Structure formats: C-alpha cells, structure tokens
Amino acid sequence: MRRSMTIRRALRCLLCWAFGLGLACAAAQAPAQTPAPTLDLRAAHASVTVNGQTRQRAVSLPYHWDRQHPGLAGVATFELPFELLTVPTEPYALYLPRLGNVYEIWLNGTLLQAKGDLPHGNGADYAKAPRLIEIVPSLLRTHNVFRVHIRADVGRRGGLAPLTLGPRAQVQALYQHDYDWRITGSLAVVIFSLLIGVVALALWATQVDVSASGWLKRDPLYLFAALAELSWTLRIGDTLVAHSPIAWPWWGIVGLLAATVWVSSMMLFCVEVAGWGRLTAAIWLRRWFGLLLAASVAAGAAALVGGFPLAMTLLYAALGLTALIFSSLFIWQAARGASLAHRLVALVLLWNTLVGLRDLYVFRISQGYGGNTLMRYSSVLFGVTLGCIVIMRFRAASAQARDLNANLLARVAHKEQELAQSYQRLEQLAREQERGAERSRILRDMHDGVGSHISTAIRQMASGRASSGEVLHTLRDALDQLKLSIDAMNLPPGDINALLANTRYRLEPRFLACNISWLWNVELLETVIRLDASAMRQLQFMLFEALSNVLQHAQASVLQIAASPLSAAGNGVRLQIIDNGRGFDVSRAKSRGLLSMQERAHAIDAALKLTSAPGRTVLEITIE
Image 1 (cartoon, rainbow, N blue to C red):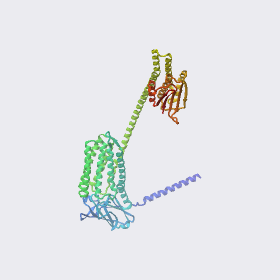
Image 2: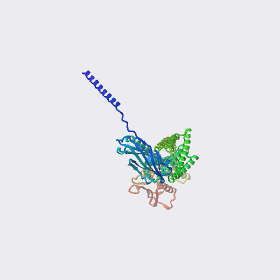
Image 3: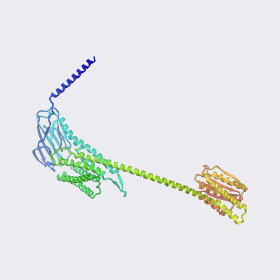
Image 4: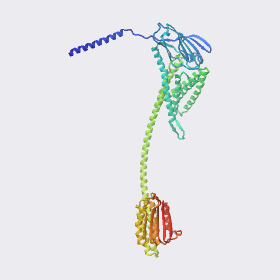
C-alpha cells in the first residue's frame, strides 16, 4: 500500500515538471513583441516675426529664442512634418521638454493644446514646465504635420525644444522623469529651503547675547543663512508658477535680485563660519556685495526693459568670479587646517562650485535647451550643513553648560561649606556674646540692685547715725533683690501671673514681719507675647522698687496688689500697687528710685502713673 502511494506521488511530480518545461519552451519559441519606436522631431520650417519683420528658414531644434534674438521679443511658427509607416491604433502622446513662453500646438489642422495669450506679450510664462499632450489615434495619418505657434518675451528662456512622439506609455515615462526633476524636485527644494530659512530666522531672532554695554547682539551667521534660504526659495519657487505675482519684466528683476542675495548671503555665511567677520577684507566684501545688489537691479532693468542682455551677462560674470575667488580662498584655508564646521562648509562649497560650472556650461555655453539645472538640488546641502552646525553648536553649548553647571555646583558646595563654618563661628560667637550679655546683665542688676543696697548699708554704718534696724533693713533689701534677680532667670516670657506670684513669695514675709498686711487682687492674665526675658526683668525691678518704697517710706498698714486685663478680650494688663500710707507730693518727688522706674517703663513701652494722697497712694503700670 505504501509502495503504491509512493509511485503515484512520483508520477504526479514528473507530470508537473514536464508540463512546466513545455510552457517554458513555448514561451522561448514565441516571437517577442517590441514596442513601436518613438520619433524625435528636430527638423522644422520656421517663420519668425521680430519687430514687424518676418523671416522664414529651415531650423534644427532646439530653438533658443534669447540666443537667436537677444534682447528682442516676437512670435514664431514651426512646422514639423513627419511620416508614419502605419496609422497606430494605440494611444500616442507628444512630449515637449520646453516651449513658449505661450504657445499653440496643432496636428494636421486640429488644435491639441493652447496656453497663454499669443497676441500680447509679457503675460503668463508656460515655458517652465515640460508638457505632455495625449493624441488619439484617429488624428494621426501616414503623412502628418505639427504646427507650433509661440510667443517669446525678453529674458524668459522662450523657444522650442525637440518634440518626442510615440506610444503614450513610453513618452509618459520621459515626461514624468523630466517633470519630477524640474517641478516636483523644485517643490521639495522650496519647502525645504523655506523651512530652513524660517528656522534660521527664528534662531537669529531668539539667540540674543547681551553685551557688556547693554546692546543686544545676535549671531549674523543665522541671519545670512536665513536670507540665503529665503531668497533661494523665491528664486526656485518661480519655477512652479506660470502667472507671476507682478508684471514682467519687473518680476524678472526680482528674480535676479533674489539670485544675487543668495550668492552674497551664502558667501557671508561662509565668512561667519570661518570666523572672518571682523577682518578688514570681510568688511570690504560686504560693501562689494552691497554694490552687486544695487547693480543687479540696474542690470535687470537694462536687460529686461532696455533690451541690453549684456548687462545681465556682466552681472552673472561678476557674481561668478567673486564666488570662484572666494570659494578658492575658503577651500584653501580649510585644507590648511580649520574647524570642523569650516571644513564641512568647504566641501559643500566645492561641490556647489563644480555643479555651478556644469550648469553654466549647459545653460550658457552649450546650445542645449530644456535641460534641468542641478544647482537647485546641490544648494540643499547648505541647509543640511546649517543643521549640522546648529547641532554642533548645541552640543558644544550643552557641554559648556554642563561644565559651567559642574563648576557652579562645586563653587556652591564650597560656599556652603564656608557658610556652614561661618555660621558655626557666628553661632559660637553669638553664644559667647549671649553669655557675656547675660553676665553683664547680672552684674548690672547686682550693681543697680544688690550693689546699691550694700553700698547704702556701708554708708549707713560708716556714718554712725543709722540705727542697726535701718542697716538690717537695707541688707534685707539687698538679699531680696539678689533672690529676685536669680528667680528672673527662669521666668517664662510674658507670664505676668508667674512674676507676681514669685514676687509675693519672696517679699510677703517681710511685709508681714513689718505689720503690713498683703491684699491680693490678681485675675488670671493672658500671656503678653511682646514681653521677652529682658522686659520681664525690667517689670520685676519696677515692682520691687515700688514695694521697697512702700516698705521703707509709706508707713502703711495695708498693701494691695491688683492686676486685671485692659479689655474683655484679655489684651493688655493693668497693674496697681496701692497702700494706705501717709502719701506724698507727687510733683516734688524726684527720687532716684522713681526716675529709675520711669526709665524702665519707657524701655518696655509701658505707661507709668503715680497718684498719692494721705491714706491712698496708687502706682499704676499699664502694658498694652
């Protein structure tokens, strides 16, 4: 069973192989169908009318109007007879690389296509794009004649290129190749150049460097690149439009000016790349280009309006010679050793110089008509080069920014370390100053309080007139003052309740020992935030001075301490020390203790009020 299946498979493969071999042999023996050949029509009979005079003669295409009739406009009719062996049945097509500026095309008396206004000149220009005209087989015979009428304007490259007739597929391939190179490629160049020009102009406008004098400085490299790309966009964009924005020949002058701006700007761009911007030669070169710009307007007017084409030729010669000399010097300097950007631009400049020489030969020296310029495409390399330069500058700026950032971080870290050390020294110094200030305060308090009382006791004992009770009283005041000074070190800032309670604890026993009763009328007080430790000590001295005066001089039997808030919200404090002693004349009271109390009240921004009469003396301290 397996053996029979294997045999059947082998027979099947053999039959398939034999069938395929037979098909291959049949295809090899079949005659190959060759497409019909195309006709290249060059021989023509021309009837040319210039300045009202008509001449007829046989010509061989291409017919370049500007070379045959320099500085003149006119019309011409070309008759091109041709023979066909048989009348074709397939669609034919006619390909014309260049003709016009405006034209009509007839075949055997039938109008095939018409573009523009033949009777009137300086209108639309249809000579820029190649033309493809489809021909139905019914219009063709064995004996045929093409009749082409054209009107050519001054300086617009009018004329007639050789005609190509043949099967539509073959002719369309020729047309499509030429159309892509001349029109589609130009559109791509216009878009690219416009994009590069706008970007370069934006870079020139935004990349601003503020000089030491305060002036805003911009990089001229981007400006010249933008001018070059935008002027080149205008120059190449003219290829894409048949109807110019302004009337001819003024539009031709604009195109010539754009070409001059392009050459000048590219040279000045190279000057900035090489770093020659401040050289004396660069200054003279800018002046020379300014002169060429003015000359381009004059040359365009002379050639296109005055009919003197030699003026435009001289301008192109001056531009070409200037570009050739500058390019040679720029490339030579790059070969000797220069920056990467300089060498890169030198290679692009060398390539464009070679391409420019090629285009000069094709369009100005040779008799060719209808070819495609390569300069429009090679100029794209300048835009690519500009992008490379921007990238290199960005990378260099980024590296510089990283270095600056690293240096800045290192300097900041160093400064932070120095600041930390300075802060530590300042903090240590502040602590030392604080300790010194505290020691000074304690010494001052002891001098003003304890020291003063001890000095008084010494004087009392030295005079021999004071009793032992008076001396003892003075020494007890000194001791109480010392205790209160020590207690003041731990008083909470702004807590007047604590201050009063501490004062009562220290002094009430002495008052009771002197048969002076103590009345306590103190409400619960809010903390006065603005009273710091120093202010609390000042307030404590004021209280002690007032109580000491009552104890020594008032001869009172009752002492009342009253404290209450100034308002219902609890803001501020009113302290009152009231005794029922003998009183005194306040207007005559100029004692040292009272003056000291007034100074301390002023120091803490408190109000001190004293009223006295026999049986009632009130000392009021108001703290808002």
